[in-house]
Length: 110
Image (tube, rainbow, N blue to C red; front, side):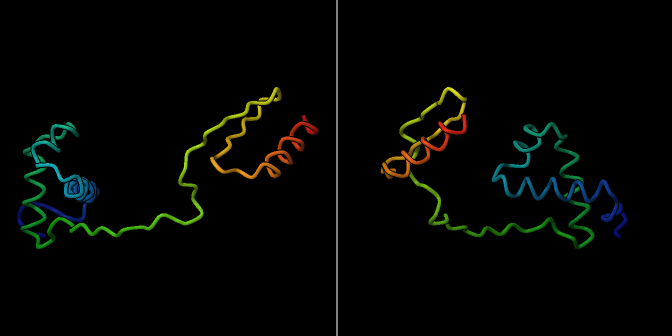
């Protein structure tokens, strides 16, 4: 701990999270403070506290996450609302036989 204050208190932990959010935002500190309603002087003070303690604000690392192959890439092109209230969204290229089976099953249950 430096002479400026504790970096392990609950408030310090919260401010560490806030500063990490600021770093990920890509905004200037002033813009971030205005958007969050946090005094700019507060953010600057906590940033100095962490630097003085040798606990620099966390660095941000990004990892690209590939889209799973099983996720439909086309939006629903047809929506069917049955009298029972069931909603069926039919994507482009849906198999007709499968759709008929689904509709028949829902109609017999409702």
